[in-house]
Length: 366
Ligand SMILES: Nc1ncnc2c1ncn2[C@@H]1O[C@H](COP(=O)(O)OP(=O)(O)OP(=O)(O)O)[C@@H](O)[C@H]1O
Image (cartoon, rainbow, N blue to C red):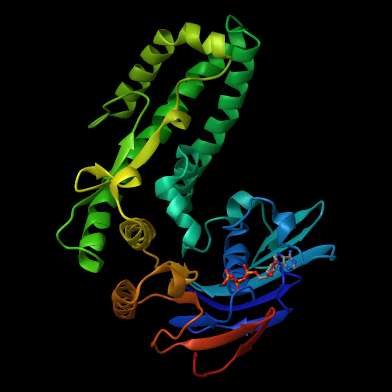
């Protein structure tokens, strides 16, 4: 998959422009605070309708402007297509090949993997941050999961309302609960499968790029306890039993104590939890390996190569790790967008960013 060009109007601090991209490396080079992250965010936003920095789209609109718009053309395995988004303070409009499209159908058309410094939160941050990330990843290449998760979240809200009102004898509650259990089991099973598959690739990538003497593992921790080898049916059974077990606590707290919203993902380096035991350099390397593994997973699930966005590579990695990453990327057939404050010694289409203004052309990165 390849993004061919992009247009944007009133996107953060960027001067409006049309940009043609290279199918391999695109390097955005500039000093701090000039708009390097914003241009990567504009690419991500145009392709997915979401930002990797904020959940409030309104923040993307340039200060003192009323609306913002973006457009990309891209090529997948089949043909060339376009996506566009318009937002103002009240409305959002998504278009696919010029036709209005609901967000659910817009999202997932272009596969993008991002690496941003804030990703370290995947190790040190909250379980909900990790769940959000992995759910997004699975949903990106699995529409059924996207639907199940959306429906599950709706039912979770409804269930919590009933629990809060202590209204669990209501006939509707029982009907909702049956569906709640089914969807909870589906979501958990898909997550287990995903973790199992990505874990193998993750370990290989970590060893290949950063340290071949260590073993990296990703583990799914469920509120159900040990769930290795589970099937959909026995997950449903176990959730039912757990609901029985926690019935009184759920009524006391007034919200669900069962379900995938209670689960977490853990990174283990040589069997020890990375959050508590790994160095900063190791944590960054784990996350980078995770992102490379995501690329491999998208290729496996969709047979389509995703686009890779890497923000601020120069200040994030030391020179040895940076070289290892660049050498690896050179060998992969990927379209890569990188922002950096220093030269990376790669053959790339270069863009210089200065106060939101982007100029292209080859130049010396100094
Ligand atoms: N909605 C907006 N409208 C106008 N300017 C904005 C908006 N949102 C953020 N900015 C400004 O855009 C500038 C560029 O931010 P950005 O994060 O893209 O910089 P950067 O080049 O990645 O910097 P760094 O290397 O320090 O991370 C900042 O000065 C920021 O205050």
